[in-house]
Length: 459
Image 1: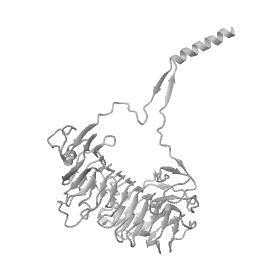
Image 2 (image 1 turned 30 degrees about the vertical axis):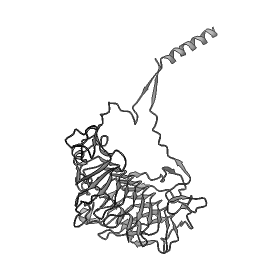
Image 3 (image 1 turned 45 degrees about the horizontal axis):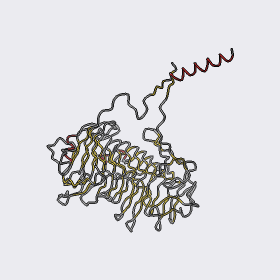
Image 4 (image 1 turned 135 degrees about the vertical axis):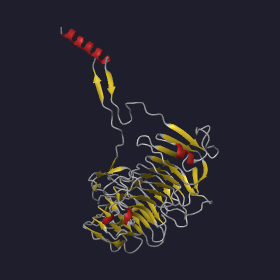
């Protein structure tokens, strides 16, 4: 009897296993409905704008693509030089189906612009992405008689409305500029300037400065800036930006008395988010950046101008001043945080202008070869021992900057948390934090998508 019972159970289990079915639920890479087909178009110097824009019969101009593309469309710009005036995008994409203009081969599609007083590319729409193009100024360009913030700018992302305390939206949102090479030119106002909320500028090499102006949630990351805008600044966020982030950028200051990374700025009060306050940046942060003063003279390498509740931490500065200075209207920075940075002075004083109100939280910084540094409760003393102070800012064994930092939590403009705990290599910092841009003892970030839930149904 016992043997029979045992055999029966085995047979029943065998039948059950044979009829198991697996149900899966849509995860982050699954859709509950068929995806819309991507429409691809092509642009070639040998094309014709009367063509349908397919690969076998491409358009000739980038301007034609800008006028034609709609949500979900991508135009591939084939290798060659395109001499054109201002290119304007007026159609909007969506967050899930942006409009994309992409070089077929990175930096081999060259926009040689004759835009004069206007930007090379103007984006007067939402969710438009420019990717991989090279931007230059044509020899036939007629420069603007007085360079302004639009003239010759490689990409200008325009707002549809001016954000203010009563209307916080920029209207147009989601401009993205990726992987561009922006050549130097005295005809340029900026390399990239964006007035749109939730803009992203990443992986670009720009010989002109880049700027975020009076918007929310913009990110500048992984860029190399090798020059300045027409006013001597390399990377700036001003006009009333909220929740701006600059991280993993490398800035080379090459203009005399230039500015490197600035949270805040010097805007006319008529354009500020809150004109009576005179403030230029709120709850904004610069971290994991490297600023190199290469001008052979003095530079304001990293600091704040009229910024409130903003932070500078885990950066590396080689030469130049750390500064806290008023914005254009004279409003000083409020409640600045400066922690976990490494400042290597070429000689002398590390402090430039030093004007703030509220509480200064400056601690756990390493000021090496500097004089007149801010008073700190936990100063880090000694040579930081980089692998190479000009090219590789990993810390070597024995560095006084290893394990001597403090964790940072960054609060956004509306109380939200801005995640800032990853180093330049994408590793999650562990306590105690290291100073500088790299965490020597850290956890590898888990970027694996979560497994989709499985339900086992027995029939």
